[in-house]
Image 1 (tube, rainbow over the protein chains, first blue to last red):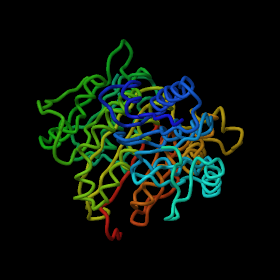
Image 2 (cartoon, chains in turn red, purple):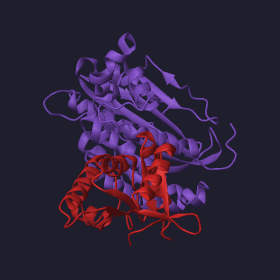
Image 3 (cartoon, one colour):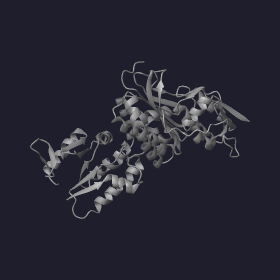
Length: 147
Length: 306
């Protein structure tokens, strides 16, 4: 099954109902721990988790590291990032590259893209296909097999 | 006895060493300090937050003269200067640190014009959230319309600001201040610039990094080596491999927009110097000043010839 995690909602519950930005290490830590808890206590086997950043304002490097990089390191499931803006990418990409890691981003049209360290990005997309979590579309792009 | 510290008439990062030298000399014997700003004609955000850091250091080191007294501060006498310092939020913060002499006008800290963020205290992560939230509302229009930055650059600006403020929360061991302002920088560029200034009177980079880095540097270890480790090598005091991303991220952002960063801590100052500036990359042996002071400058886009 696919688990959907609304990061904005987690942020609002974790820190304050008035801020929409993912900034500072302590905030990132609290948000990540809540996401990890949600994933650990999900009913049924989670094959893939969609981490949805829609409605999240700014993400700084510290939060990108604390949330995205550390979630990937734990790898409780295959993570797909959605709702990612250009500004979010600006923080996430260099942080992942610095760790020699990659993450999958699902664009608004449903196609997939891996960002981060180039080698890790290629390997990650190949792994998704090999595990039949993603397929190549007629247009040559990749899309998730699970809805 | 009271020791006098003159605040430079043009108080910015260039005149800060003169101020630091006077501060170091005056604090040597623990007498009460008098910061004399009566002749001040102009202060950059860096000067304002630096002066607050000096007040913070004076209070914590007994520069109030003992007996719990605060150091003295004579306010600028020029009406325009006084009004600007007030609009910039300086006196709101200074009131807790100094015994202020002079008439401070009853003007609210600015929520308009070129003061993008008045002098704002940073003590905890919650303060960084507030700063980032506020700056995004105010900075977007100015960054795009006045500096010619891509509107998407606003988020990068907020990220850089967040990371600069977090250095206080994570490393200073005390609170600090941030201020952001846009102004015409005639002296250097004849262009508009946006300046972020962050200052604290905390432990400084050398002390923060000493437990993990001093052995690696050996005899070279000192304020300059600590700044080099933090800004150039992306080293953090934490062993977590993800640490040290903040200053690296600021550097990337500034490289894209031809910006400058300079960090002063202890007796050293390091800078990433763009082509339009003639600052030196590393200075050591400066007059000692507590904590860390960060300056970030983003110029109007287009040709930035000297």
